[in-house]
Amino acid sequence: MKQQKGRLLVIKLGALGDFVLATGPFAAIRAAHPDEEIVLLTTAPFAELARASGYFDEVWVDERPSRIALIAIQRLRRRLRGGRFYRVYDLQTSGRSGWYFRLMRGFLRPQWSGIAFGCSHPHANRNRNSMHTIERQAEQLAMAGIPETPLPDLSWATSDISRFNLPARFALMIPGGAAHRPGKRWPAENYRAVADDWLKRGIIPVIIGGPDETELAREIAEGTGALNLAGQTSFADIAELSRAAAGVVGNDTGPMHIAAICGCPAVVLFSGESDPAITAPRGADVQVLRREKLADLPVSEVAEALSLR
Image (cartoon, rainbow, N blue to C red; front, top):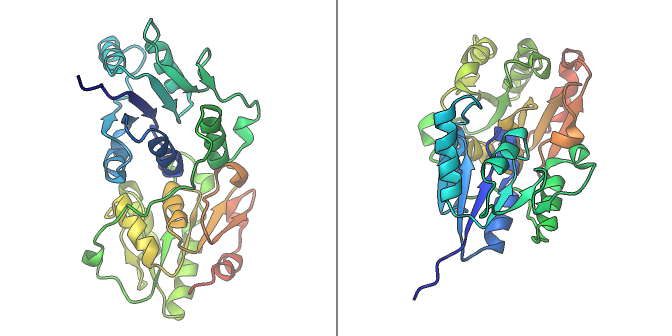
């Protein structure tokens, strides 16, 4: 009689930067459980990227039901309990994923790595919230019996970017970020000034961003020779663009993590609203520039920091 494989659940819902930084833990979990079935619970924006990674046997999309959506909650509870997981690696470690721990209570509740109260493999470090995401998750996995966690890796995220008709020499700009946190954005006119500097040196600025950042990108690109790709790139496209670019400058936002991990020389701009010691992109060539008010960061300092190859 064929022995049934053990089943594991990994929870990582978002956001983009956090998801990308979790690719190291994803690889570590797969290496530690090579013969078991691993399911990822994530949100819709990251499902395609997760499937392309090869780390998971299944990818489930979390609809993130509210706590008053009783029918949706029961559906989620049945799915989680029906998965027959013997262990859960909670890499989200949020109030929501802690709630999922409670939904799975009962006689067959799985082992749980995370911070949910009463879980079997807690990340027992009171200072965990002051650690960078990479070190924090590596320590969490070590406490769950996985001693080695590699750095984030996106070498598997590939795409054909020939459709963009890119110039021979270009650099990336990522001027967007969370719309509800405008203090994390360097002013558009400053990006435009950097774009003018690049163009004088024969480097074409390529602006990328999400669909809700097309107007911002248009404002920066209008009247210049910049190439505006906002709203046109997948996560894999951003990875491929980063490998080909001479460099990248951008705010503290998810695509900067992709660029940095893919080895693109990066200058990341931080305001006082976030702490680079905890959230900064990591890569082979990353510089962080910070001001309490990002508008006070001069164009000359940013232009000088990025040494374009």
